[in-house]
Image (cartoon, rainbow, N blue to C red):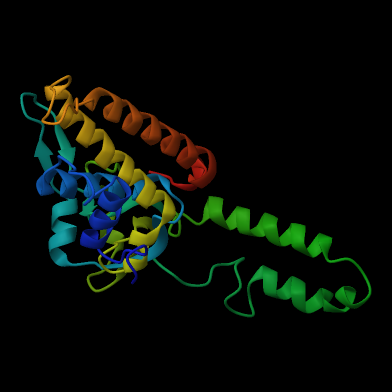
Length: 268
């Protein structure tokens, strides 16, 4: 990558420092602070920016240890209550759970074999599609899929998940699952910039990282605000801090108004 197209955390740090005036002027922020701010910017980008996450399927193999744990419970500290341990730990970059499948196969109304309803409707009414509208077939198909979604409990399980606990609770009878079967989790996961290095070149991420750098720079200098340096230069950390905050606020508003996914797209 070029100097203006960072492909690593170090290149992003150097790019943002140059935008703030380095090396022509000193940027009074230590490397540890800069590294922390880059991670903060990445987490915010992953959680809210539509390019910061991707929808993937995670396959989890059922083991005897998982089934044993699901049938046990843990005491709640300080009480006589206990809570079920019927959960699966998710990867640390999980942002949302959309759906959980415990068995993947044909149902009575979803295409998979010649005996399901949808296949028979299409087979017997195919002649109608050559000279008429397909709206009736489309509406009927939608109704059958909705009916399958409501009645086919083995395909749609009750799940609970929160981003901080990061445990996917599966509220169903685990005895139905056999060791060696798979649970398929449809979820949203944060894009890892270390793997997909092009993420470091995202325009919003670069601007937000620069704003965080400027805010931290101003916060550091504000401790010596008004001190006159050699040559008559007076430190004005408060102004740098205010400019960084304003830039950050503008970028956050832009993120939520232009780049954020609708909140209902992520269920958790």
